[in-house]
Image (cartoon, rainbow over all chains, first blue to last red; front, side):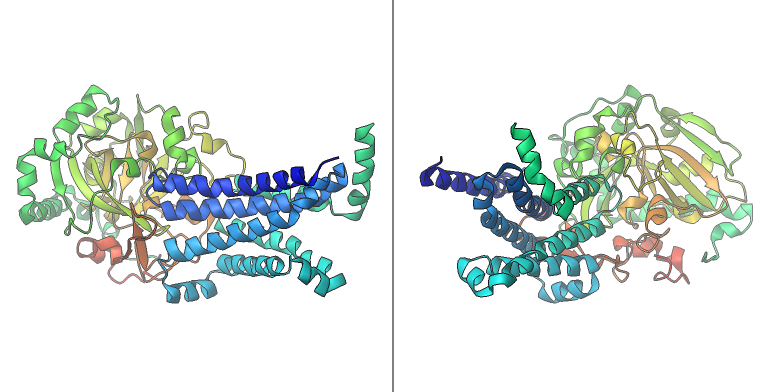
Length: 205
Length: 338
């Protein structure tokens, strides 16, 4: 029903929607509206932003099953790469704005602080998935591509652990993300996954 | 394990005498004033003018009067170029006050619901002269002082804040501690209706927020009960109407919106120690050599900073107040008693 031009517009729309928070945060920092510690403001927003993008990426498959709408599949790689971009910027803000590019300190912090180790493993995972998300890699990896990219589930778990270890006194925000994650992962359990298309059939009648 | 250390208060009642402490306080203050703060002191209007761009709050008449009688610049930083006063907007919009949420800007957005007037404080426990006191009566007998202190948060950032208040020692002396009094325990208000953070069912803090000091720490001349900052009353998000300021300890020791001060015999368990005893101890003295398990305490980010100059400075032992307070901890293993 939709022409290639409309699909292009959809993908561009998603691109700008994912870009918008970065522009907004940058604007806030430029206008001194990000508080007395703008580096930390960027660090925290980028971290939460990366988690949002990871959850959105992982919700595309169940959404496709539920709706059969092609649009969700079309943006999966893009959102995955956005997740990687946010997570990379998150680490860069930590190194730049919190540690002040003190590489020796980064090295010792990486070893000493378990939550940073866990975050780092998650980021390396995202880099591997990002690097193998192109068509060439998909062809090269063949049947192994899909199991490799299921590592995204493990990454979600690592990100939640990283987040959990940062919490100091109130778990409500973390619990909300953990609940959404559990819901998204539950749609992958075979009994649920099989029912999603049937649910669509029932809803459409 | 509870490590018992010799405390001055372990001695007889005579050793807690207000007089000696009072005298040492005077000596200390005299020294500070002698260091050339006299200029600012002699001209309070001049000192006040620094705050012309600070929004004025809505404080009761008695508090306005106390503030106008302040001894301005009673304590100032040794190095005013390094320790520049943070802008009021930053000090009042970047707060940890979990009663109003865990985000740094939550307290400024949500603390409007706190009613600070009327306010009373219960002073009880090992005292001869306890009871419930109106805030006005607590403030009245003492001279307000302005003290510019470095505030070092346990999260490795810091700001320089000009507080207004009275020495905690004044209040404790008036309460007349008994010989059994060894520690002071403080409590923040509990009222989920006024404090939305207390309504969260996922909070790890078991309200009320509790803090504690050893009696000699509480009696130390640097320990302040603040009722104002930047030449005005405390904004709600900064712990109105009454908060503690202990400049050589991490910020979380400086408990906000105090409703109860209890002199006790046993070391109180403070809220953070209860949540994570391996991360937060009772003493919480600023110490660059003892890391928080999740980050280094060797340096701090002096705020406000900007993106490409994090303004990272070395953290000083006892937050730079070692000359005044180090003797309190002679013989105490600061690595074990963090």
